[in-house]
Image (cartoon, rainbow, N blue to C red; front, side, top):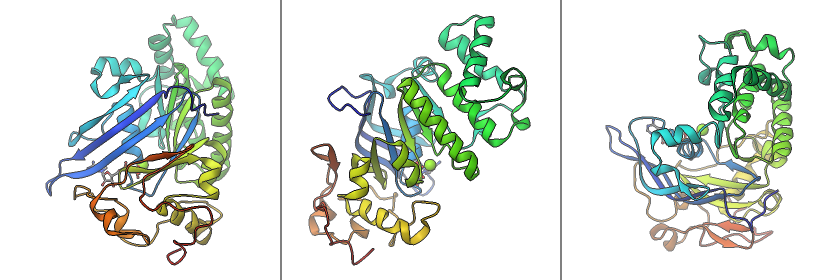
Amino acid sequence: MAEPQRLPLLEIRNLSLEFATPLGPVYALNLGGLDLYPGEVLGLVGESGSGKSLTASTVLGLLPSRRARVTSGQVLFDGRDLLRATPAELQHIRGRDISMIFQDPMAALNPVFPVGEPLLRILRLHRGLRPAEARHEALRILDEVQIPDPAAILRRYPHELSGGQRQRIMIAMAIAGGPRLLVADEPTTALDVTVQEQVIRLLQALQRAHGTAVLFITHNMGVVARLADRVAVMYGGDVVEVAPVAELFSAPRHPYSRLLLDAIPRVSARRERLPAIGGEVPDLRRRPVGCAFAPRCPLVTARCLSERPSLSAAGARQVACFHPLAAGDSRTEALA
Ligand SMILES: Nc1ncnc2c1ncn2[C@@H]1O[C@H](COP(=O)(O)OP(=O)(O)O)[C@@H](O)[C@H]1O
Ligand SMILES: [Mg+2]
């Protein structure tokens, strides 16, 4: 569980990231702030294109393209700015202190090596194990991620495994270095429903056993409700609301969070997907003036168009809005 009285493990401050494109810059991230505490699971949600994956990439010091540039901000891990770390320092941090699980394990596994190779390498590199110890530990971890016949699996190539097995291998690699932070970007989206359920249960069990902090990016609000302690809602490259999970679901304070949650049962209760809401998606080619959600917001006022609301705290909750909703507020109902 979150223990907000402790110092954050990860602190993102005023992070701006842009892409150079032939049509001019795309202002993809303008993130005011986001904190993650030791041992907590923070769900990161928001419609497609809101900047979730870019946020994850930045935390790992992996920008998605050479056109991407961080123009300002800090990403503090344990007080140390990852944006100012050298490539060698980052490589040391990745896999040992911070690790990542992607949506597509095939893209992260090298097809020409047996899946045991990268796992053994992490154990030698990040935990300093000798070959025989690394092998022993690899077998133990594969058992922990519930892979049957670990010794045989170590020698298999990625294409010889099922999607679910590959994702378990990725999870094994992600926990092998004993990280304090695990970043999971839509880790179950590519899996079929039964396997998805198994992988979610596995992640939950591992998180509880190791007390790892997790930044869990997902479209699936059902998964957020089960796994997350707190939820951060992203819109147009910024975090607009942060709240304990039950409070966000019962009484969202940002109009965007409210519209997002209201729209779920109408669109697809079964899949619990984040639906698209009405109106234009934000135009990231313009440097944001005012609130990014203002053009779609039912509560918009002149101030929202000229001044940017920052994420301000009210108790355990934070909301970036000049007109936050109260519990039972009906002001967004006209649009829902
Ligand atoms: N390679 C790129 N070139 C230009 N813009 C990009 C690129 N990658 C991402 N973006 C911009 O960044 C936005 C956020 O992307 P992303 O973080 O992947 O969104 P999410 O994971 O929330 O769906 C996208 O909507 C897009 O405008
Ligand atoms: Mg994404």
